[in-house]
Structures are given as structure tokens and as C-alpha cells.
Length: 184
Image 1 (cartoon, rainbow, N blue to C red):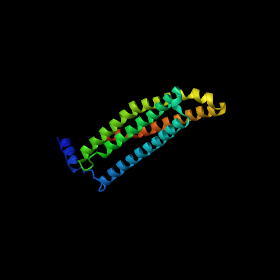
Image 2 (cartoon, rainbow, N blue to C red):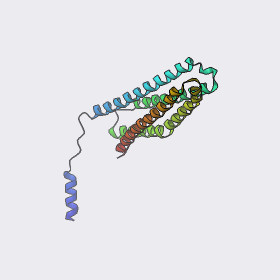
Image 3 (spheres, rainbow, N blue to C red):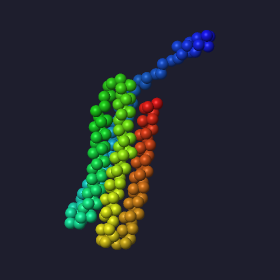
Image 4 (cartoon, rainbow, N blue to C red):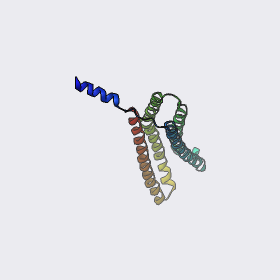
């Protein structure tokens, strides 16, 4: 029984983990950083959607069915993604940071679980819709642009989409790591 008593004694002498004095500030700082990142994402998506809308009217896309459908798919995919980000921002804003640490942790886990669903279900769908819209524009580009510029558009689109995929994958990996840490 002395082993048990020794273990119990060590357990009793164990110090309590220190709660950081500025723990609330750290949490608010992290939430602010997440909000800022989502706002930047929305800004970039909104600018891209605005450029596509301007292009829609510039080329009178409403006169050509395939061009109109392609651009509307691309714009729709961006608007869907913007809507998802605004929804996530609203959810983040509505979190009660003044609650207990455990309840706040559960709120953050729910938030990141929802983000995971967005990343693995809705984002790929929006991405595919965007690509389908772009592919629908290719015949019109081929008919109305020089061969060199057409090839440039294809190569730059592939490179841009590849870089975007890598960026999204990196951000998803970061969020999954945060979720893993919260669940630990």
C-alpha cells in the first residue's frame, strides 16, 4: 500500500496549471485575427465577383447563352463562398467570450466543426461550379482571342487555381490543427 500512498501524495503535491493573466486578451486577439482573415477573404472574393460582373456587362454576356451561363456560374460560386464566410463571421461574432472557459472551448469546437464541413463539402462544390463556369467560357475565348492570349489564359488559370488549391489546403490544415488542439 505504500506505493499507493506515494502516488496519492505526489498527486496531492502536484501544482495547478497556471491560468495566464491575460488569457481573455489572448482569446480575443485570436478571434480578432480569425475575423480579420475572413474579412480579407471576403474582400478578395468580392473584388473578384465585381470584376466578373463588370466583365459580364462589358462583353454583353447576356447576348451569348454559354458565356452568360459560364459567368453566372462563376459569379454564383463566389457569392456562395462570400455568403458562407459572412455566416461564419456572424457565428464567430455571436460567441459568448464571457462564458466559462469550458463552454467557450465547446463553442470554438462547434465553430471549427462547422468550418470543417464548409471546407470539405461546400468549398469544393463552389470551386467546381467556378471551374465549370470558366470552362464554359473557353470556346468564346478561343473564337475571339489570339491563340497566344488564349493559351496564356489557360496556363494562368491552371496556375492560379493550383495556387488557390494549395492556399486553401494550407488554411484548412491550420484550422484542423486548431480543432485537434481544442479537442485534446
